Image (cartoon, rainbow, N blue to C red; front, side, top):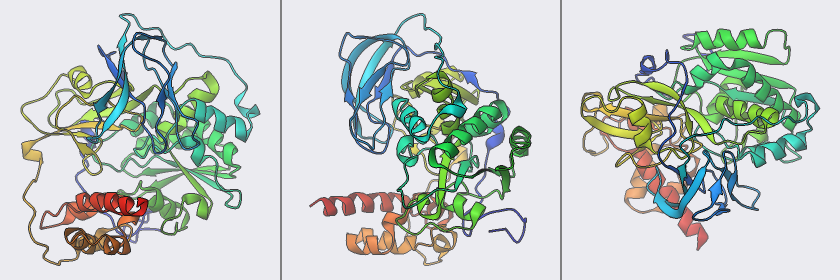
Length: 443
């Protein structure tokens, strides 16, 4: 749909938080230092966890598979360094849960990745592309971390005709996708074409918000002369990059509750995932590093870094000059959907798009008050849910009612919490509801 005010493609609902992207948007991607230790979780994706393929004392090489699973909905993990396995142990991850990790001490000198020659990209079949994505451990790098090869295998009765590259990056502060579009537009397009071939799609769309016109220019120039590809400029609004919102804004198609994009003939992939698929297909490179943004008013040198998976947050903070003043909050991800961290020990994973350091003067933290029934949470919800009713049901532990009011349809964008004058943390209540509902269904 089109915005009546701007004439740009958008969706109904949403909010306009302070974006603060100027802190890092002008910083070219640079390679992060190799840390003294990497902590690589065996499960970094939606789906079955991996089993360790290495043990204490084993030597591993850069890009070596160190964790795998026979399950279809899973994605293997690879070593991001050459070194020696210190141990395989449970470590507290970014979300507070214990996860089995391969802990590696890197060699003092790290080799460059050796690009492997393979088939010409144009000669790859859809099945070969899916297999490449699986073996490389590709997952959605926008945060959801759903295994890419699974998304590239839609039901046979749900043909995909349109592949959408999510280049919106609507989360405040984060700029890693923006920089990737400026610095690697050709590789993004190559990845897009591989996605299209894998699912047999005829059309490719790259959706970019209007606050990144330099990226619009870079991508538009790259696809010049490609009649099946287009760049669509979108209104600046959060959460424009949410999968269902993006599909609706760009195609007018509405994904039904509980259904996947293939239901309406669409596939959505992130900018970083597109580059990763190209690298896997052209170079044989597994997903062992990613571009992310380290930013915020509480960091000395906001940066966009190419960092090894498993790098502790502390090492990346040091790489960016350390704290600027007294930090008020440390967040893995962006301010809307990220996870607050109790300390800086957690490692980054495939879905980590940023590390945010907020200062006290940029935070508006107050104790939760009673709902005043203003309806603002309802007005901004892009899924047309009733967040206030979900909260009431959770407080009363009425899990059937929480489900009835749509707790499972919420994708935790945080618009409700952001706009609430009573400082109610709606997303926290929704997350609790999802855990309790899932537990009831397992019984």
